[in-house]
Every structure is written in structure tokens, then in C-alpha cells.
Image (cartoon, rainbow, N blue to C red; front, top):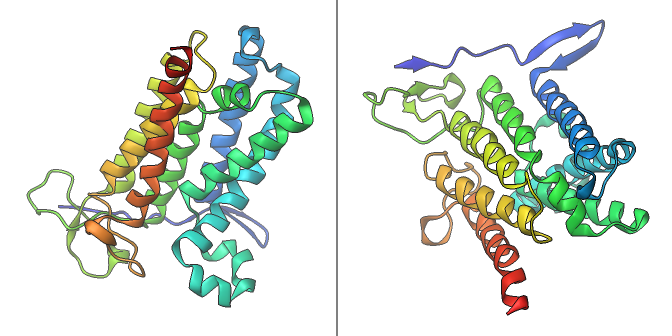
Length: 263
């Protein structure tokens, strides 16, 4: 069986300041958004945003990801604890970010950006969502480097079976972080980048993101160990799966609505 190499979570230090791999993964995701966003804005004027707006959009998007991801983890996954320990909400260095919360935060950021710039929300959403999966990819690689969010127990004969020392039980598990990086990250990015190469109905690119992410996250959750403080919920589904179902519904609605309204 494979054994997780237990990487040092600190990439390097500058004096008393330690730079973690997980933080660097976020920076890589934001940097790629800036590069690819400016590329598309310059080469595809029909998308409705120009290159000079990308920095402002990235700024509000970063706030949306960080605040939404943190608040989502606190109040979607452990509301009772954080409602009674509000000061712990700001302790981001203790860990705890929610991808679903990050999506909500980005939606709020896009609404704000569109309102202040006079740009349609769907124009912004269709521009942003094809690049988002790269950020998800790097985030999951960061989880793997940290040896956290490991998968469920699997057969020791499974070729990718891996022991995660931080799990403390020495049992073979699925490297579910890598599954998510491949599906929600690389595969979803390739699908959305291809689909958004030409103009679509407003909201359809964003709808495909919601549908694709929801289905892929729902599927991978069968291989990911549920959070210890939650376990499995109703019908044997995890919290991540329950939070993915509304995304799937929104995605289907966004893809079908233009045709239904036209009819």
C-alpha cells in the first residue's frame, strides 16, 4: 500500500513568517484566474468584460472565496459550536474552509460587482465559472499536501490505497483529495472551457458549472470520509452531498430555462 509522505505543510519561512503550501495553492488559483481572465477579456470582447476590470473582479472574488469559505464552514458544518464561540470564526489559521460556502461567497461578490459596474450578473457568472475549477484543483492539492480530508477505508489491494498517518488508524483509504482535484478541478475546467468557447444563452455556462460541480462532488463524497463531528446524515448521505443537491437543481434550471422561456 501507498503511504502518504507527510509533507511539511510549511513551504518556506521568511523570518518569523511561515508560508504554508495551502496558502500558496490559493495564490496559484488566483494568479491563474487573473491570467486567463485577462486573456479571455482581450480576445473575446463579446464576453462583456474588459481586461482592466479583471483586477477589481479578482479582488472582490478573493474576498468572496475567503469570507464565504470560512463562514460556510463555520455555519454550514458546525453552527452550534461557532454560534457559541464567535471569536473562533476569525481563527482561519486553525483550518476549516467550505467549498460550498466559497461558492456562495463568490455569488455575493459577483452580485456586488455587477451592481456597482452596471453589468449583468449572468455576464459575470458566465465569465468567471470556467476558470473557477482551477482554484478548486489547487485547493484539493493543498488538502493532499496537508494530509487532511482523506477518503474512506478501502481494500488494501486497491492500487491507489493509501495510509494517511494523520488518520491515526493505519488503515488503507481512498486518496479522495486527488479524486476531487481530478474531477472538480481538471475535468470540470476542461469541460467548461470548451463549452464557453462560443456564446451561450445567459446563465448557461454558470449553470453547467453548478451541475458539473454538484454531480462530481456528490459522487466523490462516496469515497471521502465524512467529517467526524457530523458523520452521515439522512439517507446515508454526507453534508457535502446534501449541499450539492441544490447546486445540481440550480444547474439544471439554468441550462433549461432559456429554452423553456422561449417556448
